[in-house]
Length: 371
Image (cartoon, rainbow, N blue to C red):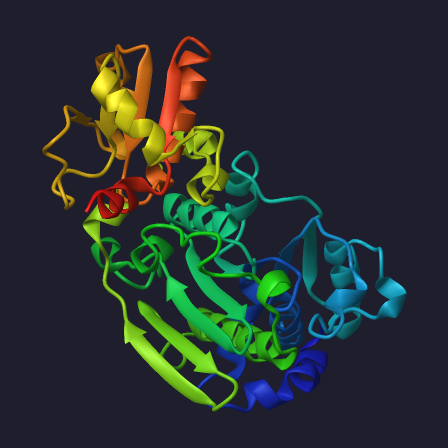
């Protein structure tokens, strides 16, 4: 792009003394990845393309549907049935033909996330499920990438900047500091289940783009280590300071192989093939011949003193598998989330040579039932 064309296209931005040509050049040289070309991703990528982000990546494997159109403003009825990522790239090229757009028409997973994210500076999470959010968060931590997070449901939205490279490593907050454990499936519904007012993702998605521009250019005060919530019914904003938690960081995979083998879907679901009800757990305790393993981190309360068990934190489970020698294994944690992940790990190691169970709903529900 010639200087004259650049000055014309971005004239209203360059004229801002806080940004200027130097800031515009930073936008041109930036590499930003948007994960999810949906309600949040559409407005975010439109404004980022318009702002002149030099390299935009789009990750989405879904197709455009009629039910998307009230909030996913990049698409029209003519796009129904087409790939969201590919169609979004075509529209963005019409908005700004001078930028590079990289399309990943695939589902983000353990096997491809690190490769895809590694080429970008800032990651925008516009997904709508917890397993994807934890996966993206952990990949950003492993790759040292700043994460701009947004979430919406019904009339409320959230926004934050996690793992900011502008903070020292010990001060960086990540998504697990906000949600150490995934909420139960029935506790937080996604848009398909709970619904959403169409303008809300536009508001939050545009704010995600704004945070990204601030991070790239260094202007303003980004939402680093802070969570902003917005209620569209009364226009109330609430801001919460976040601090890193040493115990939750232990849950983040420590390397590529551990990340690729971590079951995010198991971590974020309630029902699994390993579920053991407390009604069936009680007779097993009395009959013996089982090994009961508490996979919570050391020092987590409440302790379970009245049954014979050992403590092997989930973060150390793989290295301590040799200490597990029983034919029947029952895994426990506070809510049943981590014990399900632990059951997946042991099942992969032992195959069908062991009977492996996870106490459904965890120690908290079991103890409540016994009180």
